Amino acid sequence: MIDLFTAATPNGHKVSIMLEELGLDYQIHALNLGELEQKSPAYLALNPNGRIPAIVDREADDFAVFESGAILIYLAEKTGRLLPTERKARSRVLQWLMFQMGGVGPMQGQANVFTRYFPQHIPAAIDRYQRETRRLYEVMDGHLRQHDYLAGDYSIADIATWPWVRIHNWSGVSIDGLQYLSSWMQRVGQRPAVQRGVAVPQRPDDASAIKAAKSILGR
Image 1 (tube, rainbow, N blue to C red):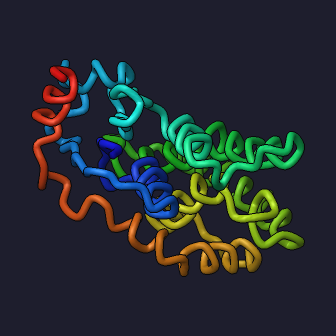
Image 2: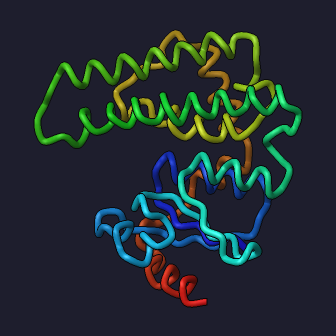
Image 3: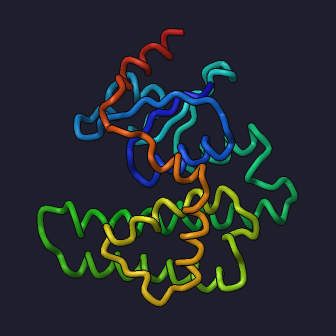
């Protein structure tokens, strides 16, 4: 059993999609980010960065893992799926995973902040992050011209990246003209496990995540 501490964000959806793809039993603990539950002492003991997601693997002596990319790698290695073991194939997957973790996520995340949440309207910042996000999309589109998935076969690289590209409109970034990226989005989005995973959690406050964290720490 896996305990999943999450919220309805792209990084959270990476892990719920992964768990659905693997068919692992997991229990959802939805953190209310608006109430800063992710900053509580109980949760910080699981994830010192105070962000979502995090997991606790009950089958591995309650081993906690934070950072979405690290969680994807951990679960892939735990099950032997969605991350090749052959050195070159594994490297290709990890290259695109790092592309998402170091590029798409941070740049699009800043586009979200300055477009939607920042108290002041700063056109230069909005333009900078939207343009860089679009550039990264164009990199993927060019690569996907000759590949169905980012690293050849469907992998954790696709699972990490799709939840971000999915919300491109929210970030104010167009995908017009990016036909291969659009086809990839549709291809990944049609997977039943992806559809189930992106629906997790159903409500941001439907579980007492802090109580669950305290329970885990007390075992």
